[in-house]
Length: 295
Length: 295
Image 1 (cartoon, chains in turn blue, orange):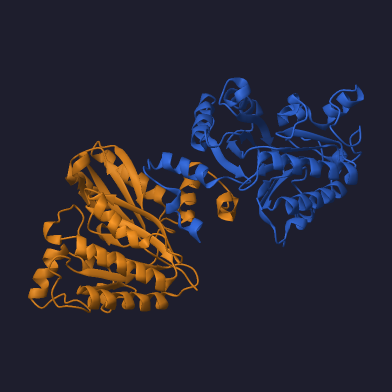
Image 2 (tube, one colour):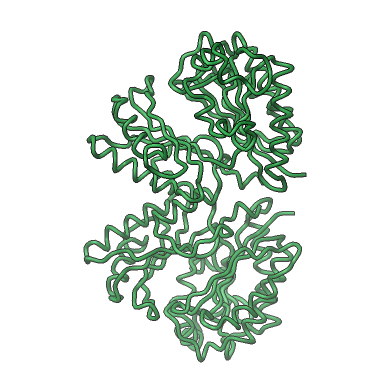
C-alpha cells in the first residue's frame, strides 16, 4: 500500500477553537498521521499536513472539510491571502509506492464526495486538471471567491463538478495533485507592503525570476510587518538558501532587513540538508549520517 | 530491546581494500545497520558507524576489530591524528530504550573479548572508566602509542585489562561509553599548521574556549591545507553554526579563509536543524515538518 501526503488549506487562522475542531478528525487514526498544522492570523488561514494510506487520507480530508464547511463563513472572512472557499485548496502529493495516476483518481474521488455531500463546486488543478488552463493553482483562484462569483454569473470559469454556483457560506474548493512544494515565507522589518510586493514580483517566475517560484507580497497587519509569501515548486532544484539570500539582497535596495522566515508545513530532509551544506561549506555529507532516520 | 550506536575508529585511512575488509562484518546483518563509514588519508584513519541491538553490535565490533588487528601494523603507521592502536577507540552510545549502565556492561563485555581473544591491552574511558583520570579520552591517549609504551615500561598508565604490554603490531585499544558527540572538521585555505593549532587552542574548552569542545590542529598533507579537527561533546548546547562562525572569525586574524567543513559520522537531526534555523532566521520550525521521519 502506497502513501500520500496532503496539506489542505482552511480559511481560518484566528480562532483556535475552530482550528482544533477542523483538525480533530485527523487525530488518533491508525493509517493516517497528522504531522503538523499551523495557522496565521494575518493570512487568516491554516495549513494541516497529513500522511497515510490513500483511502484513509481521503476520508480524513473529507471529515475535516465537513467541519470547515459547518464552521467557516466566507461572508465574514477577511484575510491577506487569496482564497476561494472555506476549504481553499486540497493538494494530494504521491509519496512512496504510489503513482501520480493513482493520486489523480483519489483526487476525483474526493472531489465527488465534496460536491455530492457538501454541495461544493469543485475545480481540479495540477495533475488532476481537466482543462489545460487549470493546471496552475493561481490561475484557478485568480481574484479569489469574488472574482470567481462574477465569472460564473457570466458563464465563465464554471466548476468542473458540483453545483454551478458557490456554496452560500463556504464558497468553492480546489482539489488537485502536485509534486512536493515547500511553502517558504520571508518576513521583512517594514510595514511598507509595496516593498514586499516589488520583491515578490522580481523573484517569482512570472516576473522573470526563479523558475517554479511563486511569490506574493502580504501585510502581516497584527505584527506591523510585511511578508514575501512563497511556494517553492521545485525545491530540489531551487535551494532555500538561494531564495533567502536573494530576498535579503533585494531587500537591501530598500534599506530593509529580513526579520525572520518560516517554513509552513512539510519539507523534505534533503531540502533542509542542502541549505545547511551551503552555509557550513559542508562537503561529502550524506543523509545516512543523520541518526534519526535509522530509528 | 534497546539500541546502541558505535563509531569505532580504525588506524587505516588509505587502503580501500583494507578498509572494505574491516567494514565487511557490519554488512548484511539483521539486527545491526551500517549507517556510514568514511576515511581520511591524512588522518590515516577510518570511522565506521553502526546502530543496532547491543549484543549484535558487540559481535560486529569484535569481528571488525579482529580484521583490523590482522590487517593493520602500527609499526608501519604514520598519520596526523593521535592513535594508540590498530583499533584506536570504540565508543558505545546508548540510543533508545537502553541505560548508560547497560551500555557500560556491554563495554566491559567487549573489552574482555578484545583482551582475551585478540590479546589487546584495554583501557576503559567515559562512563565505563574504572579510574577517574581515565574518563577523558584525550587523557587516556595522551602522546599516542609511543608515550603509552614508555609509561607502561615505567609501571605507569597500565591497561585496565588484558596483556601488560601493547600488542606487537596492533598496540592498545580504548573502549568506553559516552554521550552523543559530533565530529566536525573545518579546513582552512592555508598550509600553515601553526594557524590551525592556534585556532584550535583558542576555541577548545582547555584553552578557555567553548565548554565541551575538543579541537586539534592537523595538516592535511595530501591536500596542502590544514584542519581544525573537533569533537563537539555537547552538540545540543553548542550549535555547529556557532563553532563554524567562531573558527571563521578567528581565521580572519591570520587572513585565512575557511575552505570547507566536514561532519564525520553520525549527527542528530536536531543538530542539523538548529544550525539551519540560525542561517535562515527560521522561527517556529518543528522537526515533525520533515517528511522523511514519518516514512
